[in-house]
Image (cartoon, rainbow, N blue to C red; front, side, top):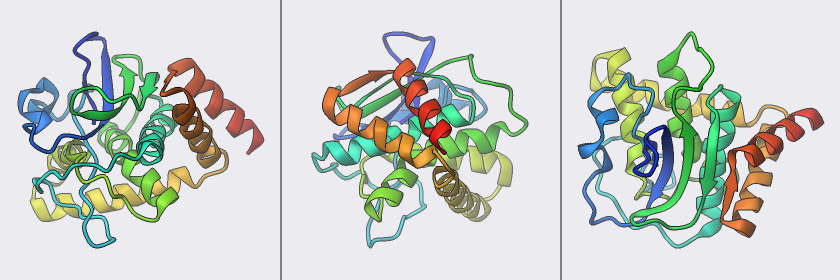
Length: 217
């Protein structure tokens, strides 16, 4: 999920949710009230029959305790964010309250973009894309806010639920394609393995992993 950090209002974060009984994270977030806010709220899409279900508002289901899945999810957020010009503050798979993992971004320090909505949607869906790429499907049903953030943005652009859902599906495919580009997926794997070993890594470590992987091509 991407949300304002309670400890530092200058940061935003992506996280996976682990407690299905908690209220939807977007309800109290200023980012959810304003879809164009650069500090968005998002979460992972629910998964049911092996295909990614692109519908907001599905009931949250507790995520299985799987550090590898959480690590690849957060690594996906981090790599796509970095590639698209959103600096990462840090990434963690250390459980914090209802969140199984967090990827914090530095608010207000992203590179200018010609398509804010597309960039933010790709970042929001990158965790789901990384899980699909690595594990064959996204199974983190409890991480609702990534999809809900993507749907908020898609509604701003599309205007109707049906068109917004199509846009979310297309953007998920774009995130998958981005991760398949030279150097990107190796960076995800490096960050995933570092998270499994250390639980938390800095934005500087993320940048180093991505830049080194891109050099290798």
